[in-house]
Structure formats: C-alpha cells, structure tokens
Length: 236
Image (cartoon, rainbow, N blue to C red; front, side):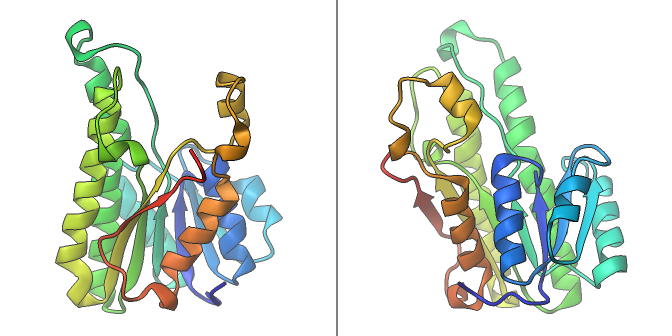
C-alpha cells in the first residue's frame, strides 16, 4: 500500500460503512483525516478511534457555502486538503418510468448528483488555489454504465456522476489534480444482507476492498490515472 503520511484526506459520508472503512484504510497509511457527515457529532466516535490526527465536521454537501465553510475549517486545522474521497449517495427504485412521478428523479439527482457537483467542484477550487495538485475520488456505481428495469432515476443519476468525473478530469489534469471514480456493485453490508437474504454474499465486494482501491487512487502510484471509472465489484 502507499505511504500517505501527512497527507490531508477529506472523507464525506465518513460515518457510513464505506466511509468508515476508508477512514481506517487511510489512517493505516498515516494520513490526517477530515471526516464529514451530515450532523455535528456524527463522526466524533470514529475520529476518536483512529490513531491519526482527525478532524470531524459536518455540513450540507449540496450547498456551496456550507462546503466552503468546511474547507475553511479544515484549512485552519491542517493547511489544506490533498485528497477528497466522496462516498455520499443513495438508492431508490421500484417502478417503471411511465408509472412514477418526478419525485424519485429529483430525489436521486439531489442525493447522488448535486453533492458531487458541489463538493468536488469546491474542493477543486480549493486545490487549484493552493497550486499543489491533489486527488479527487468519487464513489459512483456500476449501475451507471447502463439502464436497469425499474431503476431509471438511479442509473441516470449515477451515469451523470461518471460524466462529471470525466469532465472534471479533463479540466484539472494539467493542474496536477487527478479525478477518478470507483464503480461498486452490491456492497457487503448488514443492511444489504438484510434486504437480500437469499443472495450469495460471497460474490459481493466488501467496504474494505473498495477502501484499498481508494487508497491506491490517492497515492503517487496512480498519478497517471485520469478520468477513469474503475469497477470494484467482486463477482457480482
């Protein structure tokens, strides 16, 4: 694994299954962490459990002013952000397009697309102002590669995330900022096991496996990778 000693890594959705696995993986590589979730106090326990300097914070990742405030507090503590790991997102489906209203479409784009556009955009502005390069890695989904029955809003939102990543990569690569995404399939979590009790869990990808790929993409070993959408999906 890469040595990320001293690097400042901002992880959104840090209290979740994937976010907390990412926090542990980056802590193991010596990174300093900015742990973000929705509510104040959400990440306090996680931060206290890690053997690295960690700064828990909270805010609305769909609001540019809120993200700027998070970045200002992080810069006050650590000087700046070297890596953004964005894990926030959600899933909703169940009806074909012709039987559903626009509510699910708005929900998926507000949850999956706007926070990526806002958070990655504001972090990129912070990185370009610093002039020291950086890494931005977004969790998208394998479902963003093609449509699925009864999940048009979800798959469209994840496809939009992939296009944002590709566009930002072209905009930022000559400034030393790598922008990439990871496309999981079904992640092996307690909630997913409860929702799909008859599935073969051994085929699913674990949060720790995804976190290992996040660490790689944040490292110098991945300096030549720009605009990639990397499937990390186990055997599912």
